[in-house]
Length: 377
Image (cartoon, rainbow, N blue to C red):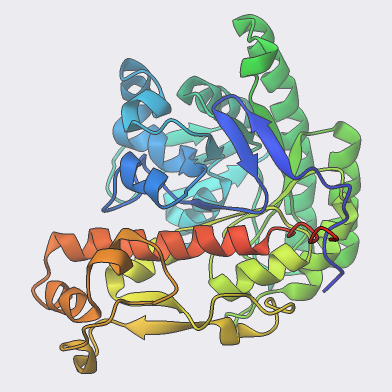
């Protein structure tokens, strides 16, 4: 891994709906909701921004419904920044798993979801228009996603298409903002995604050409884990170095505590994943083993552990999930009570567990921020 990010990296990002302080973990509110919690819960957890997904939103509740409800912010009651993913990764996943469900061509992506008889067609221009129509603070360019194990010729094709689509996205983004006469203070940002799999030369080619086109920020594209589920630390760090410290960079899909710490050490400022909230609902809770992070938190995972709430040993535990956590769940309820709620499948369990894991992630982001040097007496 390279050294921690340069001091020249901006410590925050000013957006239309608020300032995003780095580093920041953005929970996935994929279809307009972080499951089991509401906007007030999210604010109380210290969540600064959310990620929502164009691929899913255009299906449910549908773009016309979102517009009728006043855009994503008004529809969801969330006052802070919203980043909308383009949908490229989700379309890739659907089509790669079942080619009969769609196709990817130079014009865009055509797909048919499993539970919907309708065919959808997503082009770079449409993706941008939809995201702007939703009221996103950060718009992400449509990209052609691959995994690290794909053959070189597939990676090359994905990079070629990603670059062509990024240019089309930027042009459409500019046209749309001009048409809307968007005030400078309300202008969303446009992020591009660096593809290239696990091949350094392709990552370099993609990054250099995206930088030449010019965007407000960048993302690491492609599945960030290898076949064994381990973080692709070398290519992730290499790609961050290619972009340089001037621009914020998002580690798309990175959400395990250790991987967030590792990517923050490599210079990434933003992270998103459904993993912490899904883990919470399924009974895997994150706990602190101390009050502070070690200097090499990205390599040393001893600062946190997992608590499996369905373990029978917890049924009479009077202590909270974590004595070092300040969330509603830990301030007010015992581990034994959480075990009881989980065992009877009560909806309150999902809410309290989600609040806990989200506060863990936002607290982690806070602890990863550079601490001011103590004043000399």
